[in-house]
Image 1: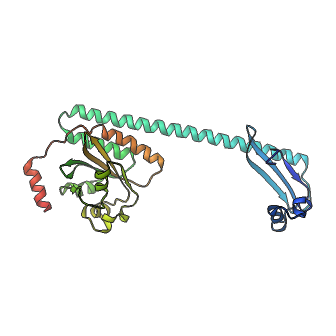
Image 2: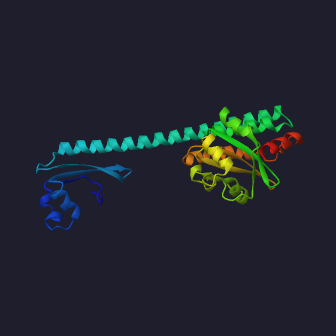
Length: 284
């Protein structure tokens, strides 16, 4: 069948030369283990290419009729049509998904631009809008946006459930770049995206690094994605804590990251010195 792409009908497999000579282990096993005697196989062809086969057998010597074989050929042809229809439907769904993702990105970008136009010189609502859009596009639960200040990174925006936001608003989240074995340090060193599948397996969590422990134990984060925002060597980032995703998820993440990077040229306005000092004193 494989060579001729045609139906194969064997009245008695036990009388076939491949069995009598014991030259084909599969035929021998079919007869002795499966008890197969009469056998028919019909190819499934698409554009003269073999994509599968429909096989029937009997455990007695009783050949199939021509009518039965013709019916089996019709079933094989219908199976090929069903496979092709499923392929076309999947392609249509993929195109629809791609268009939906593109529309989501355009909508999110438009919303951020509207916020920028309404808030000239005030970056807090801009960062909040960007982070909200990125979290939504990536189907995440919550996230932070950090900006670099000398050798530290300060969280300047939060998004998520009220409990999560209050955790980080309650203290100044400042992380140094010289701390080893934490995801933020890896981003600072490589300026590349960092994706952690399970934060509980991170060395920083096992070493009880406070921000990571708080993130996991209080915030409920498990999977982490950190993307750098680069502009003339200034580095900041948005991190989003998300469930594991497929390549589709990474496409969404890349689109969200482009939106976040587009604001990389903005400088976050300095907090009043008294407010920052008070926060740092409470942390100490």
